[in-house]
Length: 271
Image (cartoon, rainbow, N blue to C red):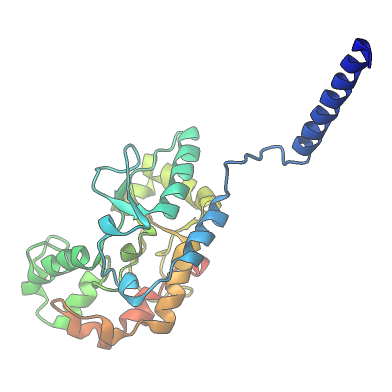
């Protein structure tokens, strides 16, 4: 074979390979990346692979030692000791970046709290070590049921908190007043408009006909639905008021109806 024929053959083969590559690339979505997995798909796979238990649901584990959890890094949280599920965290980072482009800064000020952490909060309020509305309710509300209901306006009984799940976060401020105007309102309005794009929902919306029971409205509390919906379903089928025990005031759980009114008393958009 002559040299010019060899060169022509090499050129033909190279051109054919190039055309195949270009054809394959043209069939990919314009914004596709081989390393990119959509948030919902990634979260669903993790949730399907993981077997959730009642102990998990009730926060009876250490998030620092759990394989599904990761420590939240700066600048996403107000300190370096907060933990979140990996899937919820990845979705939040995408939401954080999108909000920042609109000049909205989201800061996680509370994330995963296991049973023991929630017990500390609850019992501090129960005993008066931590004031509730500037009052020592161990003295001002001696009746156990009424005292529990007062704490339940904003704080969960240990074993019944969504913060056990690693899906729920508190953002920026814990005051409703903060989100009524100015920068706080801007943050809340952005979340209401865009959080669902990243899998997040406000579980404690304004109380009314559609949500008559449960905690007061919390504009700062947002839940990662691809996972928390599965855990809400588990709570509905398996969690009982009689399981809510192991802390001061737990004897009131059954008469109050903690599971039905508080664990399941959430914004219908989040179900």
